[in-house]
Image 1 (tube, rainbow, N blue to C red):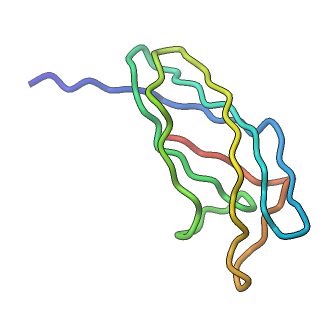
Image 2 (spheres, rainbow, N blue to C red):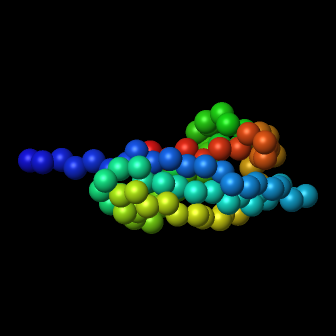
Length: 94
């Protein structure tokens, strides 16, 4: 059997802001740096440190070499958790 691979995927946060209620709005890009079509599994870290309760999502299918720009609103984290830090918030995709 032949097994194909996709990716790697590169993600970059373009902008991030947090309103007074703790809702974060982010704009980011995801690039499929591979040659084959693929879907990236991504995670948003609130302050650059991965945690089990980070928001995780999948992108649409990306052609090899394709970059998409996406926007997303993120619900406020639980009150006993780390708040969004717009200076170190990250999107990591695999």
